[in-house]
Amino acid sequence: MSSEIIVALLAFAGTLSGVIGTVYTASKKTTYQLQRLEEKVDKLEAKVDKHNHFNERVAVIEKLLEKHDKEIEKLGACLNKGFAKGV
Image (cartoon, rainbow, N blue to C red; front, side, top):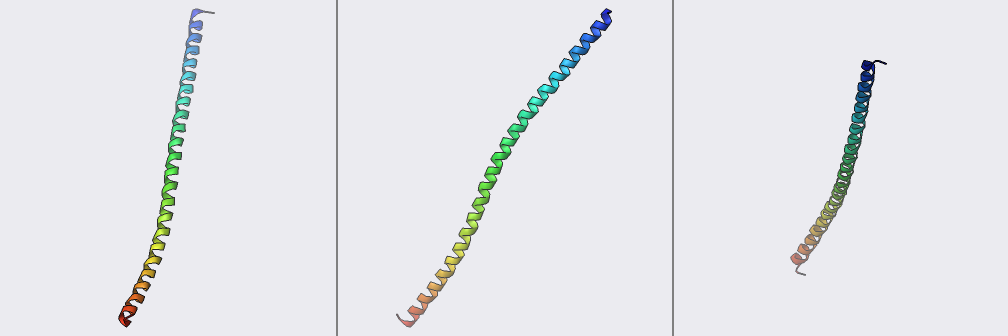
């Protein structure tokens, strides 16, 4: 084999190993970044779930307050009637 062919084969081998190394490294970095992104999404989902449960509890509390406000109005009306009669 001539020296030009040997040099060309060595250059090809070097280029091929460089490309393979670059693709492998980029793949590892992308996988790492995806894992971190998934962790962040999981944390965000947990916060959203917690927030949604809070909204549900507030809605229940608001309904209870409305119910109690109506009961207080009824009691106030009864007391006013009792005072009007002189009880």
